[in-house]
Length: 279
Image (tube, rainbow, N blue to C red):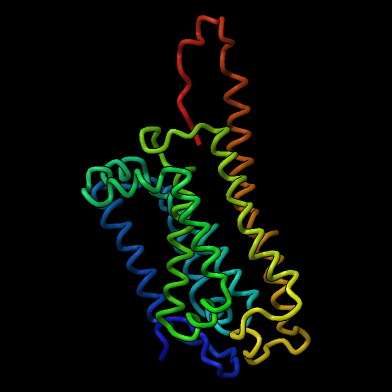
């Protein structure tokens, strides 16, 4: 039995397979939320629970059978789908599900407090995300890691933690954690789309398969070669991977425009009343 999805070299079968390590990870994440957010507060808003549950579901889908298994050792396309779910979709959902009161309790923790403030720095967050992104797409690292369960686990966790770092400066719930205004948040999100162009371009335009893991894997779709699979993966990384970021960009822009419409002009008496900051 495999605890985590990794490349096995065995012919693909559509028969369901169990990955207890994935269930344990998802269960621990849900338990952490109940222990640190729900129980101390006594009750939690349905919206917060919904966002967090959506994030947990994205992680489960990305890691478990069949998406996780296909991405671990058969198709680069599904490998990219797992990356998008773990880095760009699940983290913002999870962070939106954590109320500000729970974050403020974390600030008092001797370990979590400095981490919360440190990762909220845009340059630090972008560096963490981009370094993990680039390293996790180096062919030698991918081929070496995906052949073992621990290596595949390391890449998946790296994607998830890099995604949390990426989204934290944008979704930090209080200005004393991250002081970026809306224009800076939009600039930050735009900057986050630049480095992923590098692995996406290599996957799309390479003249030969870059990863032995997927080149030598048993073919699932006879009409899709390893080269075509890699090209589709590159396109998905950029075209689909950017959608969550541009969606967040649009939300921030329209909220900024709306706030500007209701802000009194500088010479208006009411202009001295500050408008609360929002994402």
